[in-house]
Amino acid sequence: MIKVVAVGTDGSETADKAVEFALEMAQKYGARLVVASSYKPVNEDTIRHDQKDAPEDIQWSINPTQEVDATLRKVEERARERSIEAVSEAREGEPADVLCEIAEQHGADVIVVGNRGMHRRVLGSVPNSVSHKAPCSVMIVKTT
Image 1 (cartoon, rainbow, N blue to C red):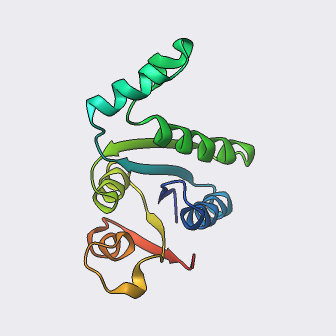
Image 2 (image 1 turned 90 degrees about the vertical axis):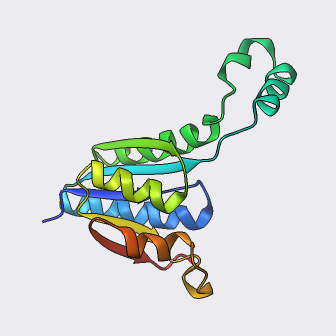
């Protein structure tokens, strides 16, 4: 029985295909969806520059996770439209590590990840790393 489906996204078109598959899987099994994303730290000077150039009323909202948070909220909204319980989390770190850690902490039964990078045989590609580090089953979705 699948009770928790985890999926990672960076907001890209290929990641969206994996997200759509995860949404369908969660809906089919009545499972909870856990959406994960990672980010890298942003230089403080860059943040200050972006804040300075932004309109005064939104300067407070500029932060390193701004785009990641927006991406996660969109997936949560898509889940709600399908009556799927969903939670999301973003953490600093490497995408594969972050996805596996979040999946494990939420008790995921399966991680859904796109195949982008699988054909390259490059160590460190996200799907390859997830397939080796995952604390649960992994569904690799053809996204390319």
